[in-house]
Amino acid sequence: TEGKKVITVLESLQLSYVYSTKTEINVELGKKGNYRFGAFSVDTLKAFINENKVSSIIHASHPFAEELHATIDKTAYQTKTPVLRLERTYPTHTNHHKVHYVEGYAEALTLLEEKFDNKRLLALTGVQSIEKLKRYWKKNTAYFRILDRKSSVDLALVSGFLEEYLILGSPNKTVDAEFNLLTDKKIDVIITKESGDSGSLSVKIEAALK
Image (cartoon, rainbow, N blue to C red; front, top):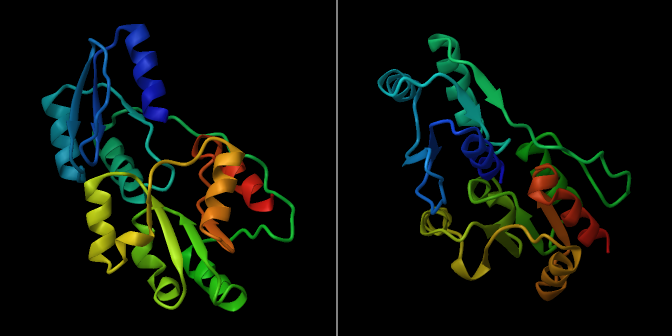
């Protein structure tokens, strides 16, 4: 979402750029853009910056891409390359007895097991979280919504997760669409990342309360 906004800005300013993603995707670039994909390490990112005479990095990745955040931080410090971070906007916390905020997966698992055992779970936390939440879905019915990409499906299956419980697609943009998904799958509890407005966080919470 943020990456597309950056493309629009750079094209309007007529600045040359390289658009980089971890896995290969279909992306529409303007005349000033080039595309590459593949995960960066600190060493490979440093080499890329030097070889391509990169003058600045626009960091528009997902807020939970922890490894990438660390890689950019170390590389930018070592190469003295300026970084512009495109931050998401976040709604204020919802004050409701059915909405719980936790610090991480360990705390989430404890809450799920203590309060929501034998409940049907919808996980909106991405394919990387399937392994982290394995303890819960091994004993309870759980659906995971993940991106409709072969690489994501393959990663889910490697964890031993059943394909029939995968929901392929992006977050719903309307409360009604999300509500229909919850009722169709007879969902009792949702786990989601605090992904901000562009991650449809408010839509997810409102649909759950509805």
